[in-house]
Structure formats: structure tokens, C-alpha cells
Amino acid sequence: MSVGQRIIALNLIVEWRILMLKKRTWHLTRGDGRMKRMLLLSMVMGLVAGLTVAGLRAKEKPPSHTTKKVMTAVKEGLLKHVLEETATSEQQHILLEYLKALPDNKPPKGDAASWKAKTRELIKATRAVVRGREGAIERLTKAGNCKACHSVHKVYPPETKK
Image 1 (cartoon, rainbow, N blue to C red):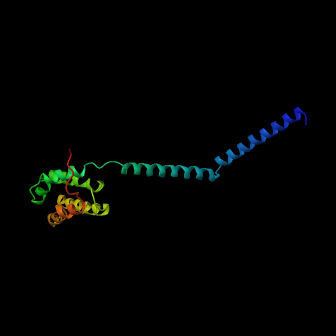
Image 2 (image 1 turned 120 degrees about the vertical axis):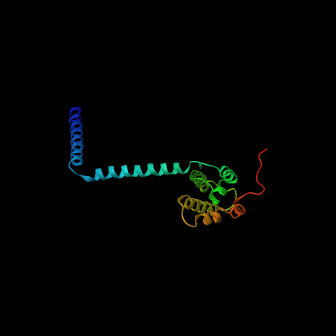
């Protein structure tokens, strides 16, 4: 084959490929749904992946209050005032906000499932008091029993900082 014939053959091949690309493009714009479905599927998968990563990062945030800070507030009489019904509405809400941080904290010792169950019951009981439900004080008294939680989850003797 001469050089001229080779050039003509290459030109034919290039023109044929261009024609095929135009033909594919024509199919994409004329309703061949395969490419559109693939594009939509990849966009949805990207969105799901993004939301999953965002959800995981949200769970990695540290709790708003440490267990020590919550227990300090309780020892200062916040829970006592709520149980005696002498606390203001604002104090009740403050106690509820402190207690909402407890399930996110790691228990100093004991089973994490037990910790979550006890702290969630404490939150539910406090929320019932804030909403003014009947029998809420008794429920909070039972859920706020210090010994029931401390015997399972508190490290004795408490660690002291030197």
C-alpha cells in the first residue's frame, strides 16, 4: 500500500469514527434513556454517599456537656429544686439540656447499653416534668436515683487530679 492510500484509509477511519460519535450523540439527545438513567443513578449514589459521610461526621461531634459537668450541676441542687417543685421553668429546661448530653458520653465503667437506657429514662422523666405531666415528679425521683446508676457506672474511689 502506498503512502497516499494509507492516508486515504486513515481519513476514512477518522470520518467513520466521527460519524459514529455523532450518531451516539444523536441517540443521547433523542431519548435513548440508558445514559440518562446512568447519569441519574450516579447522581443519586453520590448524594447518598455524601449524606452518609455527613451523618457519620455529625455523630463524631463531642457531647455538649461532660458527665462531670452534668453531675456538678446536679450536686449543686438543680435536680433537688426540680424534684421539690421549687425550680423555675428556666431551671427545668437547663436540667433537661444537661441531661440530654449524658447518653452521648462514654460511661466511666460498666455496660454502654445500660448507661444509655438509664440516661434516656432520666431524660424522658425530666421532659415529662417540663411538660407538666401527671406523675412526672415520681418518675423523675425513680429515674434520678443516684445510687442505682453510680453503683453500676461510677468508678470508686473517684480519680483525683494531682
